[in-house]
Image (cartoon, rainbow, N blue to C red; front, side, top):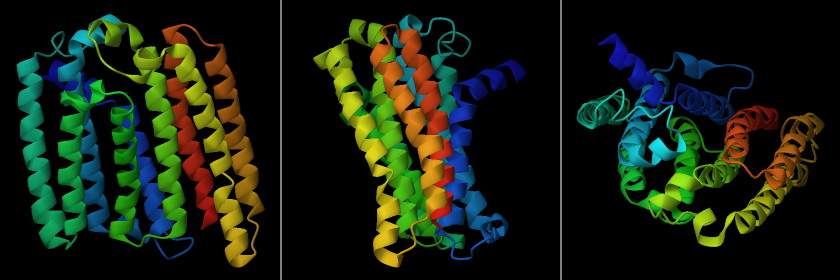
Amino acid sequence: MLRDLKYFLLLSRPANVLIAVLSFGIACYIANDRNGSLPFLQHGPFWGTVLSIVLIAATGYWINDVYDFRIDRINKPRSTIVNGYLSVKKVLTAYFITVFFTLLFSILYLGIYAGKPGITFINFLSVILLFWYASHLKRVSVAGNLLVSFLIFLVIILAGYLYRINMPLIWVGVFAFEITFIREITKDIEDIKGDLQYKLHTLPIQVGIRSTKKVLTVLYLLFILSCYLPFFYRIARTGDPLWRYLLLSVNLVQVPALLLMRMMLRSSHPRDFAIQSRYLKYLMLTGIITLLFLK
């Protein structure tokens, strides 16, 4: 039993889930009107939404690995859990039971008791889209990458449904979307060996690694330029230049992004892209933290 729990925890990508929860918490702080306070930490629907994010994200990884365990045996032979440490039947059973109770909780607590039917709808939509991604869309060039990026955007927008959608919150959502999209394409290069053998149609397989690097270069540059949009938007609206945000953005986001782009252009081995993918996760978190200074 404890052995199974250990592997279900590993299957859930706890670091990724933690980053999603922290991003949501920061988004709630930005969406909340009260500067310098954290009243949402005493707000039941906030914790209910956190629970639903954790469970939906975790089960999304479970179903993804059920569909991908043959490919993972090629790309990550030492870390494949499904059909190795845990049977497909066991993972599927846990998946459907957890999803059922998560959605039931979303209806009864978040939808009815807390009066947040929009969050219930997003939770249902997220479960459906994650299943569709794992079973079909992941095999379609770029479309799967866009879907995962959109789901990360939804995690941020959930804060707006709980509190208030404002412009800084939109910037956080756009930032998270961009970084996730870059990371998903980077992961496709990392996994090209197994994806090619099982005839997936990811971008690196469709156009080649060299062309995919060119696409990533454009995405990195667009991302860096977009970091200036909140700065100039704030100047145009209030006249306040927010130098603290710009200073942090340059040092914690833009320079690291340029270094990652340079590393990407010089990379040739899947291991190199795996390292970049990991760094991009932390870049998203540090970037969202810099956006706190927009409030």
